Image 1: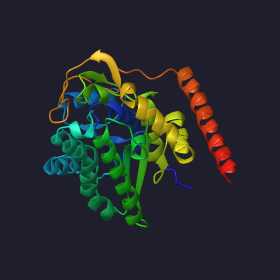
Image 2 (image 1 turned 90 degrees about the horizontal axis):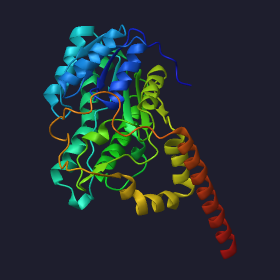
Image 3 (image 1 turned 135 degrees about the horizontal axis):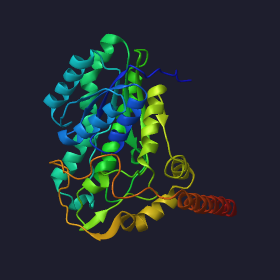
Image 4 (image 1 turned 90 degrees about the vertical axis):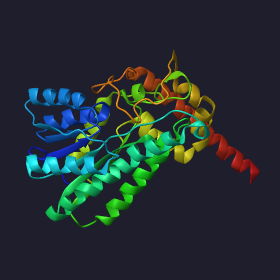
Length: 328
């Protein structure tokens, strides 16, 4: 059983804190008494977050930086140590995604997505681990995605990055066994963040998350839960979480059929949009804060979807078993 940690007075670096899960996780950690060092490319957005944290009685250091630039990463870690004298938790959250068929994506989009959404996590962990090893304690808390275990069309580069990041985190956990340094992962479903308002698309239509969409605070509360009980993998949602993994094990053809046939349609709104580069290479001004333009799916719709998918998967499994018996 994971040991419960007292969070008050601990120091955390939160990457990707200018919006979405990073922003909301920083607020939730500050409520627990965690001293923050927040980083992202947008200084102005981070300063808005800093004011909100301080208005609630918390401490927050702003250090802008790009997770793809090694010098920026080292500077964030150094500035945090200079201010607080220690680092207890690294919350890896910075990520980007790009929408398009794999063979039609510009190669620089694929490379940039991997640089930010995978190698950015590795760079920060590589920078903080010497400090953690010296102290004999520390916690690398990775905000992952349900796409770390699954897949969706139009997001091949992001899916590749998330699979790689989860695999790295599992290997790192084994390497750090017995050192006092913990590794945790939060597998986040589709949440109502500005990520979809930032992402480039090749389809001239506004990208939206695969439904259902959860409140971003669901992910932030899971981050706090992992911070309290490190060394675990947290799956905060049921329909787009626990149930999805179960279905992938017992009836993978159900998800393949739905996403294969309807996946592109599910991820595009009717609203026309020309956004070929989004925030991949330069930050954008819009989308500051936890929430984006796509609201959370109402609870009754999620319940209806659960019932429908459960019936579909159950029927498919029973049908497959009946066919197997008939063949015998």
